[in-house]
Image (cartoon, rainbow, N blue to C red; front, side, top):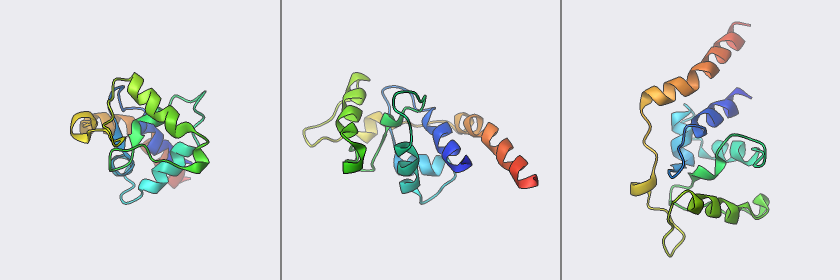
Length: 125
């Protein structure tokens, strides 16, 4: 699904030691107002084999979003982020002013260019 590919292309750009929110990823992927779609896409990532750094996407409060459907990966996400140097406060929150990823539009455009080409090819077909 090309929509998921747009999300994955953005998430792949988030460097170690930084995070983005679900809403931020949605907006950068051109999916305004669809942060849950980002969550659904990241839920489908194979954590052992995929190159999508799913752990770097958190909620707008600066927290790891907990879910019974994630089978304990909430704790894994926090652990991986801490290994990347991200600090959590006593309430389990990340300081978004300090750790939020602020990409340039050039980075975003370059990440989405291959998908845009595929989308326009699908549109013409």
